[in-house]
Image (cartoon, rainbow, N blue to C red; front, side):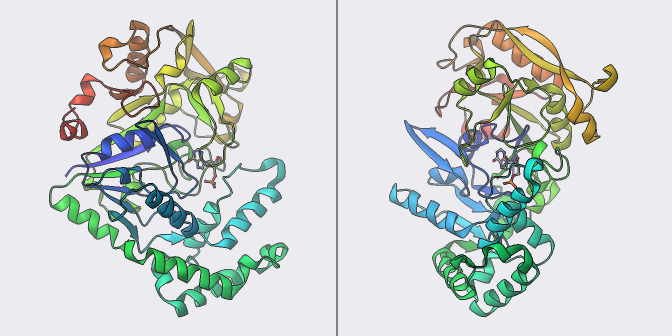
Length: 438
Ligand code: IMP
């Protein structure tokens, strides 16, 4: 013990990578539990920017085991490229483990993702087009191909044939693509298998053994609560469960193995892709915020939609995940505003007021935010290292958020650098902080 889960409390891109990187330092194992290379984590260390899509960001710590759990969908091309890139940069990968039960993204999944979005036209979800949805579809349809299948040519070929048969019609426009040739595909995937073999492991056993021997396991989520396929803004969601409970199914840990659940939120809000976003800003201030926060997708480079922090949605995320801690990132981006808006309710059709996150999707599409305005600050926060260094208005802003969602703020981000964080008083009392002796 302990087992600590990190989840996004908004629509993804909250800065989970940076928090994971910090919390991973004293961890024995970091394991990802869902999503795939639709995620992108950026970490800045000693002036060097690292971007991860599949490998847990803990890989930069020499003593931490890093695993890709069974709940993740893996594009083996992306994984092997990421391995090559890290190797070339001199990073030791002997601590990497890949679940034998994780499902693979196949070339036809990428094609189907593209085709699905094109078919939806104006109603598109705005997926990352990385084949995530179709790979999870095959998993549920029991037509998925797993990492372990890469080690057996006969089984691999049989499974590819079985998986492609029902897709014949949908794949007809791609029939001439060399990527769909059965022999070439099998060979390419067997080669990935040879390359990945040394990392393939029983990661659920590894997780259990680490916890059983008193170790510290960090469960790393991708995307965010509002992109969850069950609890998010369906159908404008991803095809997995980014919520905390998926840390169990996605790794093989049991619910009793989880001790703390850390939700990560930006000091404002962003969203990539389509779907409701009640606090979205459209005027020129949106451009200013986007530029100040560098709000462009790590994976796709798409400009992110931006808005004020939505405390109704954040309180919902706190409930769905049973958050025990809140990390607020990018507080520095709000510097220079006279007033900062926080959304404390929604206004719907016919002036209806909602104080709680509405369960009906139509309502969510119609609402706009009801705001409180809090005083802003003008000081640069980049050098602040303790709560006392922060201007009073910034401290009041954080206190307002924490009171509203009823979760203590443990960690703050005040710049992109690894050292640009503040552990709050509440944060110093948590298990990861005690382990790291901050
Ligand atoms: P998919 O996960 O590629 O199927 O995309 C489904 C939705 O989730 C789209 O709106 C994407 O923009 C969004 N999404 C997927 N991954 C991320 C992420 O890591 N950050 C933010 N949004 C994401």
